[in-house]
Amino acid sequence: MTTNDLVALSVLAFVLIAAVLEWATGRSANGGRTAKDWQIAGLTTFMMIAVQRPLVLFLIGAGLSLMWPGSAGSLAWLESTYFWPTLIAFFCLEELIHGAGHYFAHCRRPKARWAQLAQAVFKHSHRPHHLSGSDDRGRLTATQTFTNGWLWWLIMPNYWFQLLCLYLGLTEVFLWGTVTKGLWAAHTHAGWNYDLYFHNHRWAWVRKTMWALAHVFTFPTQHHHHHARGRNSARNVCGSLALYDWLIFDTLAIEKEAPAIYGWRQSEREQRSVLYRYFNLDLRKYL
Image (cartoon, rainbow, N blue to C red; front, top):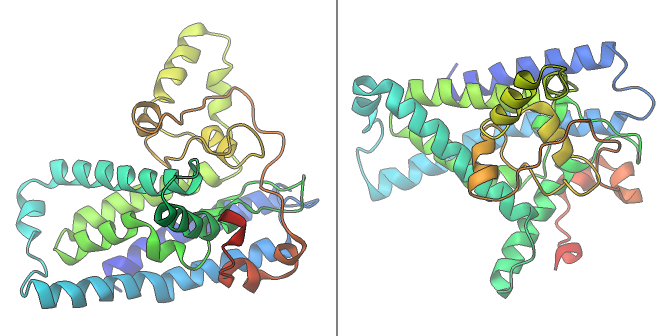
């Protein structure tokens, strides 16, 4: 098993455990999660592990071996000499790159035509991530972590950055950094709102501490509001470090209650066909 496989399977195991717990507690019932949601979650997870991650790693290796012969493993010394600074730098930079790509998929329409086309691809590829359950009854669950259109894994720059670091020899950094981020992302998509307990605590110092922490880290309810149908659906675009939402993208939103309605409205065809959700390339809606 490669390090790339280990990362994907570790996060997948957590997602499956969380999904089973959500199903057992009834969170997926009554339209909270439909059969089509489970099917597209399985399809996107399979494609990520079996096709997209290996493909991106292959393209990086093939490209660099031509442009920079001997580059494979060339930064291994950095990991062995400065492991913790390199791990922290990897995590923070990867999250910033991810936040920028995700922000682009949600921000206002740019003026330049080429940028409008690029954003349409991002928006359209990201749309399946925001389709959940039956209209007005959908719930956010951990299986949503990997759900996106088929192009998402190929256009998001942070995925290329992750695997570039792996190719250059930052194996342990890639392993621990990516697993940590993946597990955090899975936990913010799960049906948990434990942070509300602290946001609404009767002691002021607990509430203030939680408020401060929510400016640094992304907690479940913050990301739940990103998946809500309302004023916050384009906010909280960072999966782990809310610090960037606060200081860079100006997208931080901290609420003290869970959203009322999750998920964007779905077309009839999106409700009916998993393959249409995942593979269609009709960009007209966003142009």
